[in-house]
Every structure is written in C-alpha cells, then in structure tokens.
Length: 165
Image 1 (tube, rainbow, N blue to C red):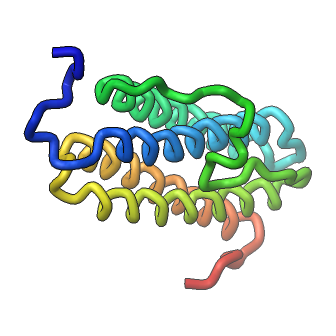
Image 2: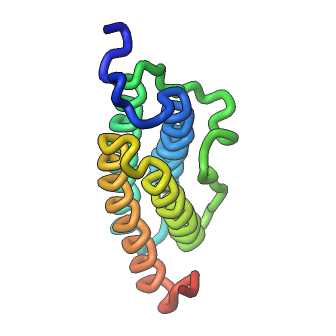
C-alpha cells in the first residue's frame, strides 16, 4: 500500500525508472529555460513571430516537465527540480545564442537531441512500463513537431536547412 501506483506486476525496476525520468525532467527544465530566454531576448525586425514560437514551445516543454514530474511522483519518487547540477542531468544544453538565427539553430539541435533521447527511452520502457512509454510517446510527438517548427523557421530566415538529413 505504501508504494502508490507501483504493483507487484510492475515490469521494470522502479528506482531505475525514476532515475531515467529524472534525466528527462532535467532536459525539459533546461528546454523551458532556453526557450523562455530566447523569447525574452530575441530582437530584430523578424523576431516577433519567432518569439511567439519560442513562447509556445516553452509552454509545451513546461507541460512535458509537469507530466514527467507527476509520473516520478506516482512511482514513489521525488522530482528533482533543484537547479544545482541541472546542466549535468540534462540531455540538452542551455545554450548561449545572441542572434535570432543562432537561437533557432540552438533550439533545432536541442530538439533533435530530445527526439533521440525520447526514442531511446521509449525503446527502454517497451512493455515493461506502458504508462510511462505512452506518456513519452506523446512527448516525443511534440518534440518532433518542435524540431520541424525550428527547421521551418531556419529555412524561412536563411533559405536553407542548417542540418542535413
């Protein structure tokens, strides 16, 4: 009864699941911070529509963060939202872009890393924890959409894709 949602039939290692989800949580926190910073600091004649996209993505990443934190809690863990060490727990980087085009590129790279990270996690969970896998599949779909948005912005502003393939 003390284990909450975890039953004897749970197919995975609960602590390992929590640890893996802590990395995903840190990744989402970093993404929220990066998109928020880019939204606030983007300037230039073409920046308004891009800033809106950054703000929308920050909101989406915040939703992902909450979903993951809630899943950690359901499994009996405590979500690690401590800013100390955040950069070492995250799969993506915060970044340092100053120019609008560089912000778009940073976000595209980060989204591609997040997509690969979530694909790996989905394979890891497989049938062991379908609840976590399904949650991550939903997040993956949005991350793929974010990557596509950043790619489209890049093409619109540079006329060519930054990353091949």
